[in-house]
Image 1: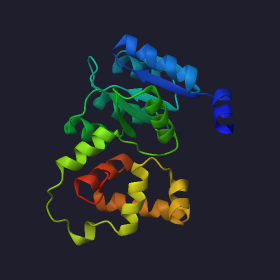
Image 2: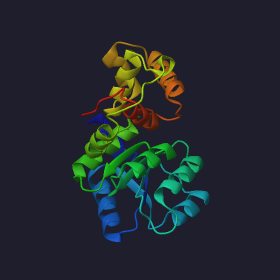
Image 3: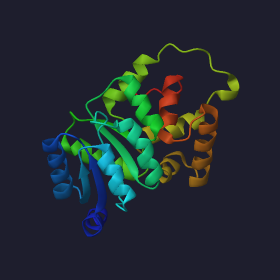
Length: 223
């Protein structure tokens, strides 16, 4: 209740990048009316969004499609992350093929949601992202797992420990670092160290990329 009241008093500033005007307007309306969000900018192209950001537009959260006219959402995500390093970026798209999923996560997206989901699912996913989680649409998680069932042996030095796997597994479910610490009976500092070790072993720089790489190597099973 207190969190909901806080969101109404201090709404989450949102940038929406989507080339279908009707869908863009409906998402903005749902979030502003039901989710305590303020749409500070909505754009049909990545170029327009980047121009506004370079001009001083800021936000806590960026929702972006991938299939945009002109610059793709994937190319744009890298630029958005560079311009707004503290903002959380969520992909909201119809694309579910593995190449685009991995490319978006490697570009720095904090989560990936398929458009076919409900408004409630969107709100829940945004809450997970803002809390520090790395939510993946169930269709995406299942697809990744099925695609990488058969793997080459992993050198022991690059294998994740049981605790590192637990931390990434909980991250993939949307828990933030404090919630993971509470769940596993650890300090938040210890959780951060396990995540850093995972990054080193998996050769990645972000939690979404770590989760994807851990699934690819067979360390995580999100089914």
